[in-house]
Length: 314
Image 1: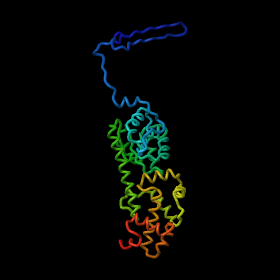
Image 2: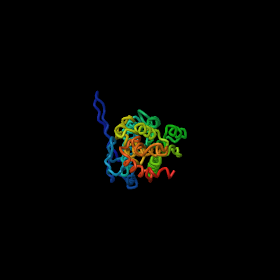
Image 3: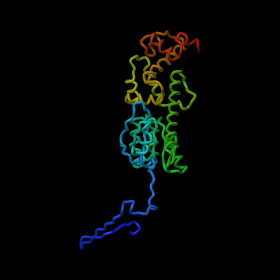
Image 4: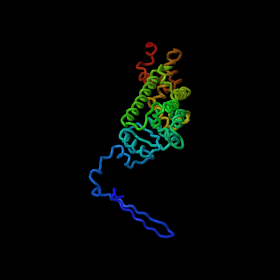
């Protein structure tokens, strides 16, 4: 007690108990100078103390389009991740794997960063279920964990994780990994767009084999002759809302949903032209254009030549 300049008092009352009071001086003058050591708080610690709401999303400028979903049960780490990424991304927090899966289905983020050890549903189960659902199977996932065993890394890979990072981590390295996953996804979008615009029956790059895109094309092709076929009908036949359809297409292709429908129509027109059995007017009706003039316009935009010149270039 003398070492810390402290005092202790005791008050007792028979039949009721005792109360002990310990008093420690908080003034620096009470201690020798050599005992005092002060350092500026680290950036990480300062960030953790800032009050940031954990539920919902933080306000960000409209031009910041990429959305990151962090699935993490540690509130301090959630605040730190929010502060580290909210300048460049729209950040959403989920407190466990169950909520993470629900958020992933709801917002379709560009990247998911998930912890492994969590209550209710762990990161491996969350990752596996995200991969099993058609709506979310394409979303890149990075596993963030303190478990450094090779078996855990393998389990994360088998669950469908695209990347793995150990705790404690360098925030700049994590940012670089997230950015790389987004760039890879952008590359796939260009592949899908090129495949649609050039009417390639099979794309050599295996990464372009996407079940959702193939199903979308199949639905459009089944409705080619219906000139009233639109985004609303497409969403209904894919069993999803229009906003979900817009987000899923945006994540996979540089084309809008309307442009994608039109591209499938024009690509089918190109196939019919190669059969050399129908007039342009007949082809227009078969692929859902109201007149040949509209088909010629969109055909030339997509292939660079009018329908009359298309066969000559093949």
